[in-house]
Each structure stands twice: as C-alpha cells, then as structure tokens.
Image (cartoon, rainbow, N blue to C red; front, side, top):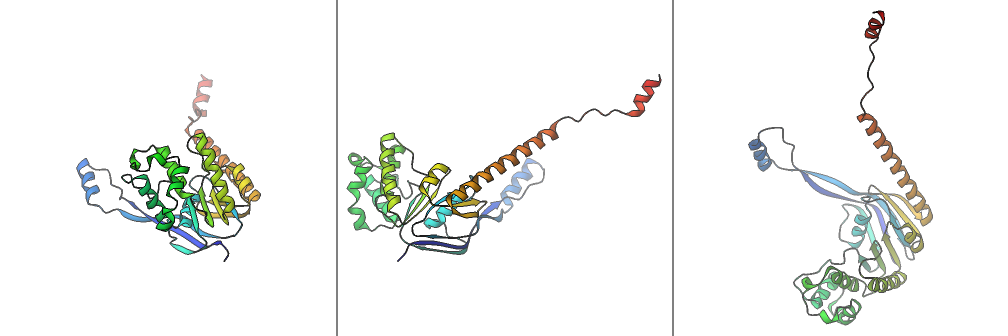
Length: 282
C-alpha cells in the first residue's frame, strides 16, 4: 500500500481567554473587578483551509517566516494536534523529530525513559527491549544506563532523545529544522544517521529557514503565510516566492518606520502674513 499525506481544508482554531478591560478606578475597584469578572473566550485561527497532497517519494520543505504556522502544521501531522476543521488522511508509519525530550520522566532511569518515550512513539515493548543497548551505545550513555535522567546534562538528554527517535526506520519523517545541536563529534554521527533515515523514508516533511538545505534535500516546497498555504509545488518556485515575500515584508516595515519617523518630527513654524506685513510697514 502506498504512503501518502492528504489534507482537505484542514483548520486549527484554539481558544484563548481575555480579561475584560477595567476602567480607570481606584486600586480597590480594579482589584475587585479583576477578582470577580469572568474572562471572555476568543478563538485564534492557527491554520486555515490548508489543502495538499503529498505522495510517496516527495521531500517537502515547509517555508515561511516565524509564526507562519510551519511547526503547528507539523504537530498536526504528528497527531499532537487534531484539526478542528477539514480532513487529514495519512497512510504509513510516522517518525517525528520535533521535541527530543517529549515523554521523558526526570525521576526515571535512562532505561526506563527509553521504554517511556519509545512506547509513546508507538513501538511495542518487545521491540524496545531489543533496541535498548543500541540506543545507549549510539547516545554514548551506556555507562549511565541506571542513572536518573535528572542527573544528565541537557546535551546528554538531547543525545538520548535523538537516539530513541531515530532508532527505527519509518515511512514518513517529520522534522522541525535540521539537527545541529551538541558537540561536533556527535553532531557528525547524528547527521549521518539522520540522512540515512531520510533516504530510507518514503515521505519527508521538514520545516527549515535554511534555503540551501531545503533546495538540496527537497523536491517540493510549501510556502505558508499566516496559517494558509500560499504555494505548493516545485522547490525552486517555492523558494523564489518566499524570497519575494521576505523582500516585500522588509519594504513594508521600512516604509512604516519612515512614516512613523516623519510623523514624530516637529512641524515647521507657521508664518502669519498679517504679522509679517505689519512688521514691514513699521
């Protein structure tokens, strides 16, 4: 059965709450109003009418400015967020590298955390049991297997999370930026494994601001702007449209800054003809 990702008008609306604005009053009335007034619920649209078809063999770069919705879309694809509108269909096993510490328990040992995170990723216990030694070896933490996670440094925890996340090959790989944290020796090893997993995946979706990497790794690009798909197609065209959008946004910011600066300048003095004439007649 072929692997695919199909989105049909999916949207994601999340609630947020706003405290009613208090009129200027005494501190007591302000405090009383804050304690007794109920916050009003509003909804923010993070994704809006997103539609696309990703087929087996596609390597897709999610492109867009910060806050455009790239990571949110990735989290929908992983199943962490459920769309509130539309329909999402996926065929194939998923592997996500979004949060390498997801599912960890600070009080548990390294071995216990391997089981916790791996089972949270959908692996069966008998599968995990056979991978514990290789995960500890790859993360270079075998001598700390029975230590509690909270005793590890952030770099060691990152290595453990990466080793667990990439222990198995999956059909669909979902990445939020390319791996590049940690000491140089481990980063080199990690990138080698990551490239191996990418090449072995049937579909890859990666969010990245690195346009050179996107062009090298991907054959398609999805430009996301304000939670909507502005373009989905060939990677060169997607990157060209992204560059134009960046230039347009920069020009708009510069124009707005220039307008604000002009508005703050003091107006020139006004000459009153009547006064000038009277002065000249004296």
